[in-house]
Image (cartoon, rainbow, N blue to C red; front, side, top):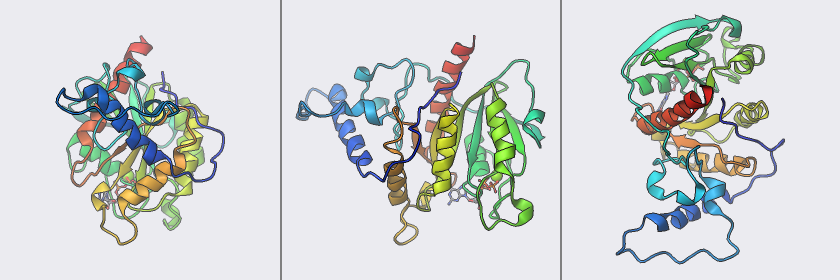
Length: 294
Ligand SMILES: Nc1nc2c(ncn2[C@@H]2O[C@H](COP(=O)(O)OP(=O)(O)OP(=O)(O)O)[C@@H](O)[C@H]2O)c(=O)[nH]1
Ligand SMILES: [Mg+2]
């Protein structure tokens, strides 16, 4: 069963409230976890909205009023709950490259899978290598369009990571352009072992409409996803285009579109930022899916 995130049908104008709400939420929920010597923060005004409910991703098995900040993964809005389990990657095997959705592995065990998608060059293959702690399990390149097929990797003989071709790189050579609509959409619409997508967003560039369109398409088709911000090591690297500014702008853009906030997490395949936390988040999605699938 997919963890469904319900989008609103279209994107309203940009709002700047998301970060304020999120950090207020943090202060609010910290109350539950404060030590006895710490003076409690003043209570929110009576009219304050239920902040925790609107900003954090609260997984199955966690009641909203039991959330405390020590349950939130660093650099993310993701609360960790009782379904989180062993997240260590012990083995990885390349299984198959498929040119069409219908050629993807048919697994009699129906082992769960996570699809990694995003614009060309966003860092999909690099993220997979980072998650499995190997340099070249998935092939990476400075040139966009390196991944042209749907590539399945089996992790710990129990679940799959799927590397998908990128979308939307206008300057890619013709040979590197993939008809993402016909190709990858077919995968998403027909893969009943898909637990969730990881939608990668390049934090080193300002928000791109095509990423918002992709998120909206997933939402409209009831495909659960996590926003994974990549290249977060590039914070402050480029003048006027800081990663954390880009990230905030992106979150502002999406903040009003979801009844339940989608999970998001900051990562870097260069420094390993977010790697273990993302694996932990995936373990809770997977374990919940396993239980529901019985
Ligand atoms: N600084 C930095 N560079 C990164 C990171 N992740 C990926 N890159 C670089 O970005 C480029 C593209 O990475 P890939 O992993 O091949 O990107 P992709 O999304 O798989 O690209 P396609 O297969 O073409 O769609 C490479 O030069 C990587 O070294 C990161 O976290 N930080
Ligand atoms: Mg790739």
